[in-house]
Length: 308
Figure (cartoon, rainbow, N blue to C red):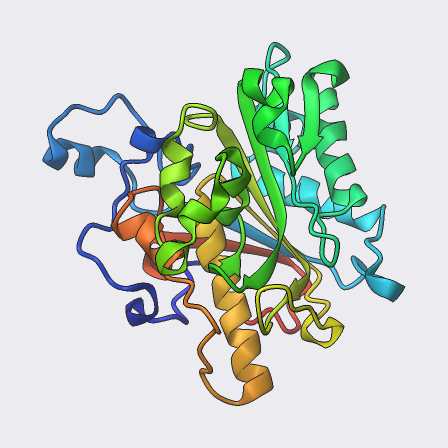
């Protein structure tokens, strides 16, 4: 079903809603990419409007102390990837992502208050080896990724991180996760990180990202200040969002965050910093789709409190 709970006003409506995904290396399952002629009109007729994302939830995914369930979370990831690629077997689905000859970098997030976590990272790595990629050609890293030889040689990137509100960019999610692929991340902080999507066109990442995984297991819906963290602003949403279009994944996660804020605050309270980099990744940089009308959201599993 296509989510329609968020108005276009929330995402800075633009007339140019169809991204030139192959121009920046985004592989969108919902966008069947074909050899594209230079003529823009022909391009619009050949690229499907909808980007597909899968939202999977399980009420058993998170336990005491925010512990990720090592049996349930990998199963959730399998269900999401199978649904994304239309496969009935998880290994077959992952073979749509990688080949045995690939070198794969898993770009994770290691922020100590809310890291991706070993359970989700391990589940990804296991499925990559199941798909035939040798363990020696799989790397998992956040800080220092720019100087890691394996990531420099990577033919495929898997992008995974938790969702949280962010002082510099409004929303810390998949687009933002690549900021450590540049030598001076602070140079991208201007105008609430409006141009983060340009990082995706750099040679080290361009055309390599085959899967974006946004952990919504215990997302953070509110924050104050650049280094602020308060456990009370996390909640056990117990979900994972998966897609090949990073903008569509982030936009869907952002909708969940906004809905949670309305539930908690009783109003549409603005974030401390605008998350408009998500919309601009679409309207300015053509990285993917941010408008809910252009996103097919497949929902699996636990429906209580889904919010979108």
